[in-house]
Structure formats: C-alpha cells, structure tokens
Length: 267
Image (cartoon, rainbow, N blue to C red):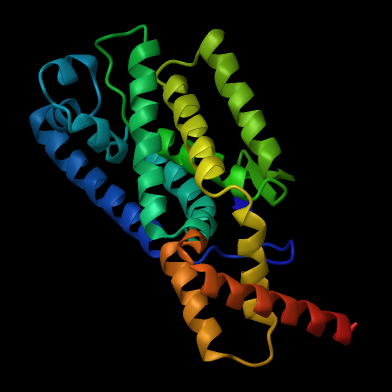
C-alpha cells in the first residue's frame, strides 16, 4: 500500500516520530512474545491479547496491549507495512499527539466492537489491524481524493482515491462479517476501528487536509525561507494545523497566497 504523497509518483514515506515509535514498540513486543510464548506455551498471548474472560478477570490493559501482540510474522509485517505507508502523512496533518490518540482510540473501540459481535467468547483478539484501519479511515477523511496505490498480492498495482479505498475495505469487511468469515480474522475490530478513525478526523479536522497540502507544497516550492513561517510550519508538523492561533493562520494564508502568485508568475 502506498499513497502518492508528492506529484502522483512513487515515493518513500519518511517516518514521523509517532509512527516510528509504534513500529519499533510493536516489533519489540512481538519478539518478546515469541520468546515467552515459546517457553510458557502461549502465556504471553493469553495475558496481553484481548479476550472476554480476560476483561472479566480485570485485565483491562488488554484493550491496549492486544494491539502489540500478533499471530505470525506475516500478520505483523502487513500491519506495520500499512502503518508505514499511511501513518506518516496522517501524523503530519494532525500532529503526533492527536495521531497517537487516534491510533489507540481506534484500536480500543475496535477491540470493544469485536467483543460485542464475536461469536466465540473464548477467542483471543490480537493485532494492530483495528488501529491501522483507524489510520486508513482518518487518511480518507483528511485526503479523500489522494491517489493510493495497492499492490494486490504484492504484484499487481491498483490505484484508487483514498475515499474509495476506505469504502472498498469497509464493504469487504462487512461482507465477511455478515457472510462466511475467514477463521481467525477480527472483521468487527477492523470495521469499528475504521469508523472511529474516520469520525475522529472528520469531526476534529474537517477541511484541514487541503490546508495541509497547501503549506507542504508551499514549503517545498518557495524560493526564500522566512523565519516566522518556518516557526509556523514546524509547529504544524509537531502539533498539527489545528494548534495554530489566528495570527499564525494569517501568516500561513499570506505564505500560501505568495506561493500561488509565484507559481502564476512562473507560468
């Protein structure tokens, strides 16, 4: 999965702080999981994976820790690959703090959704898929028309707009949930997480996706670097565009108009 961040081409996603931390933490926990489960017959997964009996026993931490536990190398690889491609752009748009809130809220609500719909009360839900679907949902809300390229079976590239990707994934997950689901996949967690992420971004950051692209493009294209604008751009990258006060938004608007005039003159 790859979103065409810059000029519609294939680009490498530069890792942002929260995405990097989540990937490192998830991989580290998985390595610990492999070691402990190997000598304790799955005790780590039972303790930190999400289960209805576990919550009834007071293991409330499972609503968070299950996001870091995975069932196989391919399971964690696909989740972290999706986070690698979809996470950085989303984090740059809303800031690291809101991105982490988005990630964990989507994961927690995804886990709760799985518990309410699960027909196997003794099963254990593991994996970051619910949180990842939350990131995909937020990306679709922020950048609905951004082209996203999927490698189907890691071979066939298919490009679609972000909103279409979210709809296709949502319909597929719902169809599996209501039809004959594949064993061991928590479709309810995916759906609940995706909806949570979409609503989170839509409510808190409605209309900011376009503004985010404006200041990113202007920052790349402007011929001279103004100290005040640099400060504003760094604040956006660190805290999200929502954190700007009226004066800082005015600086950003002026910079955007200046960049547009420059492009008009160049043409």
